[in-house]
Image (cartoon, rainbow, N blue to C red):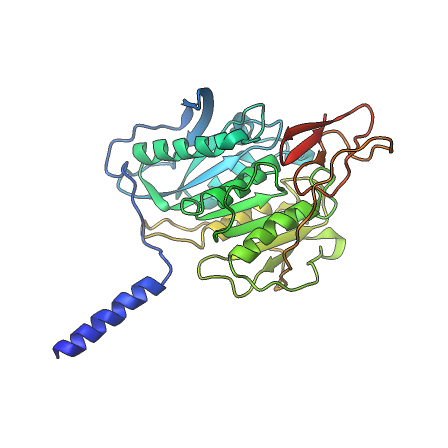
Length: 360
């Protein structure tokens, strides 16, 4: 009998080490009177004053560990614009990327404000900003530290990618909307659940950049790479690719569409990024009992099961003496960049950091 008991105990221990980690990891703020409210805050990071907003769920409960979702704005945007939302018919974003109605009061939202309206992440300062915000929120509120997410459009998507590279132990999953390698990738060798979407007609950050950073996590997550590349559906409709054979609890989903550089791309008039992002984030549940949400009326894209092969690219430098092809605000250089390097007149290609030069 004793040997049987030891055998059963050993099997149970083995199973707990093999199963994906899903139990909540309550932060130090659990069970305490909250020291953070839904408002704007500031902090000093590397000697610079930084600002961010926090949005609490309705009827916040200090005994319940909540998800935390970081939402990063695009170049030229601001935290205030993410909070307020913009005109989606003119390429703007829904408030908080449209996620609060879907989260159904199961998440705390953190909205950082970028230096010079972007995320150049010089010397890793924006990653340090993330670290300090996460610690502050975790100390002041009840957070499930195993359920920390990040999303953003354009430069904000690049910052989410950068966090997936540099903070794989803190970030549970990211959703990169029309991103590229703009904010660096320190580390970038460990698996992180990864969702991304991009348009084949993107005139600011070409789809090749989105595919390249996606392939980092196709590789890291052990997914099976195959070809050809997924393409948009009829009329440019979005097509969803769910990769096969990824590591347990480390999925990769890719959505390709025929549109331009737009966080609010639609299928039949319905913005699909919020529903896709929430569907991806909400599959990860701690024991905090976070409720799921609906799809917000978003039409799901066609589902495929294709995957792709990791590729690498050179780093061409901007050249002169040829007609300009890159529009204002477009990328024109940086590590791994293979697109156009000459701006249309009267704009010039200006280096923002090692990974990103832009026509200004």
